[in-house]
Structures are given as structure tokens and as C-alpha cells.
Amino acid sequence: MRWARIIKLLRDDPDTGIGLIVVGFAVILGATGDAGLTGVSWTLTAISGTLLMLLVSIVRDRLAGRSKDKSPTVFPTQDGPYSELVDYINQNKVTKAVFLQYSGQACAGVLEAVLKKPGAKAVVYLQDEKTAESLGSKFQAARIGASVKNMRKWRIKYEGKSEIIVRKCTMPMSVRAIMLDDQLLCMGWYTYEHEHRQDVEHPDDTVAVSGHDTATLISRKGTADFDALTSTLAMLVANYEQASLPVRLLPPSAALPASAAPWPAAVWPPGATGAPGATGTSISKVEPWPGTLRTRAEPWCAWAMACTMGRPRPKPPASRLR
Image (tube, rainbow, N blue to C red; front, top):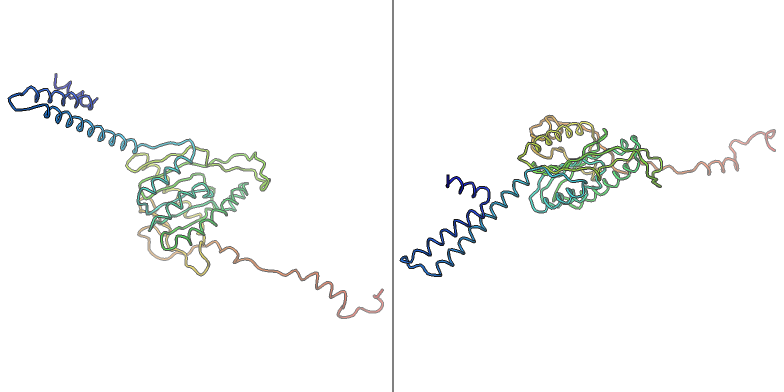
């Protein structure tokens, strides 16, 4: 019965239990005078006990922190988790990342942090501008265009260091997600609200797409929630892969990447473009490089009319002259 109490004390309060054991051990050593123990022995015993208690506390805190890291963390907005993702990227070797984003503006810091990693590959799915406009948000369409411009700059800036692939989805996007390798998943959603703001640049907008002010969670590998969310992400990637066009980030002379698969086949849907194990060739439509479809037309109509009135050919008959 006495041993059961000691074991329970060590389990519930290891610091106190070990402290009592150390003190008892020191008392026994000090009482053993014939062993030649002196005050130095008492001091060494106390120091050893203190170090042992400190070691137990550190190990316990590490285990508690590791256990805490395994549970999903929910944030009221997306600012907190995106800041945490940047810290994770800076402290770890991230090689593969996938982004599901409406415009990509809010996650710019996370994306560039990935591209700074040597050998990293990022695949970004954005909403197509035409889809955003058809839903009633030219504001978001403008943000998407601005994000693509930044990604073109990063493609050139980090050329040879990392890789970025961008695709625009024609179907409406409702979930936002960032997956880092197969270790960390950040997930949230978008809300479509009635536009009540007076936007000077886009006064005709009828829909506001919002994601920055909705709840966002971070899940880590090794938990049931991570497996469930990863399965949902794979389903979304499969849908967006089939309903999206690759965006050309380099001039037309540069070749497009053949694969957009960002990570293992467990996450990438079977049969998707560039999926691990996929063989054969594929043909896909590509969004044209800006300006390639532009045709210059000189306004010569007014000049031609003036010449015709001054020197008509052939001359009209005299009966028509005034």
C-alpha cells in the first residue's frame, strides 16, 4: 500500500516525489558517519538532487509541449496562423508546399518564405479573375491580377533556387489551405457576403469575398484530424486540377513545367497532371502571356475622310456640285 502511494505521487507530482526521495537519500548518507561522509557529501547530494529534479522538469515540459503540438490550433483570424507558418518555414527545411487561395494577397509572406528555401517547390491555385467578376467582385479580380504580377517577379527573382507553379481555377473557391510538405496543414474558408461598402474603384460590386476574418486552424501530422483534413485537401486539389489553367510566369520563349504535383501520391489525387507514377503526355490550355493578344490599330478613319472630301475620286457629276 505504501509503495502504491509512492508510485502515485511520482506519477501525479514527479517534482515533489523525486525531491522527497533525494532528501531521504541525503539523510541516510549523512547519518552514515562511519563511511567518512562529511559536509561536502551533503552538498554534493543536494546539488545532484537539484539537477535531477531540473532534468525531470525539462523532460516533462518537453513531452507536454510535444503533446500540445499534436493537437489542432484554432485562430480567430488568418493573421496568427500565417505568422506561425512563416516561423515554421524559417526554422525547418521545407521542400514542397501547396496553396489554395482566392487572390493570394494575404499569403504573400508565407509564399515568399517558401521560395527562399533552396530546392523548394510551391504550387499555387488561385481563383480565375473572370470567375470572380461573374460572381460580382471586380475588387477581387484586381487583387488576383496584382498577385500574379508579384509571382512573376518572384519566379524571376528565385530562378534556379526554387520553383513556383500557378494555376487559375474557373470554379468558385470556398476553402483556403496551405500545406507544408506532409507535416503541417493550415486550413480555413471563404465567405461570400453582400457587398455593402462604397468602393470608389468598383462601385458595381455586389459580392464581398472574405477570408482574412474567418477562423483558421493549424493541424500537424500524426493526428486523426490531420488525416481527415488532408483527405479533404486531396479532393479539392483533384477538382481544381481539372478545372484550372496554368499561368505562364515567364515570357513565351520559356517552357512550362511538365508537372504540378507538389508532394507524395498519398495527397495528390490519382491521375492528376504530373502525379507521381503518371505516364504519357498531356495537353493543357495555357493562359497567354500579357500583351501577346494585343493588336495595334491606328485611328486613320478621320484622315481618310478628310482626303476624300478634299479630292474625291472619281469626281462627282456637275449636277451634284453645289
